[in-house]
Length: 146
Image 1 (cartoon, rainbow, N blue to C red):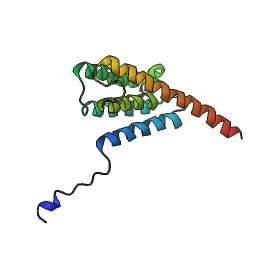
Image 2: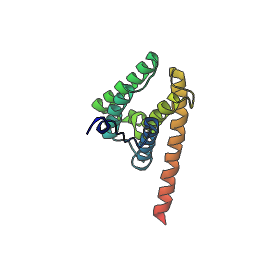
Image 3: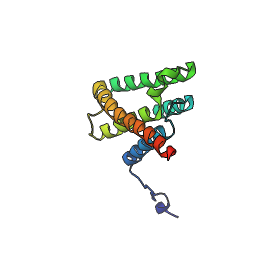
Image 4: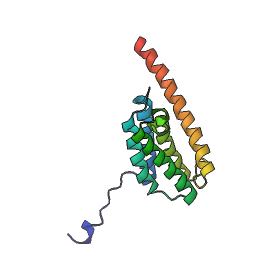
């Protein structure tokens, strides 16, 4: 077998592209599945997924602490069933944050090295995503009536 056996690589997607596609998939689920409400299972899954993401991106300590606080709040919201803040951790909002962190780490948007730049970019992207979600709800209702 030799050394060639261990040197075979099968990378289909670059890690950044895979992360962007993953974020877009989560946003899609938020738009199509979480049309009317965010379930505790979505919040829980997004929170656990975000813990993994926090361990794999290069960010400043203050941004890390801010995002860690966000993650802890999501976990507490699930445990205490704070349904009013579930949308902060739903697929549309969470997917928007992952997209911002991925694109920001590549130098797009406002960057990810200050809390302010993360929040501003996140709010802008999340607003666009939520507007698309509202449009989808209206469009899907009109389609059902036909």
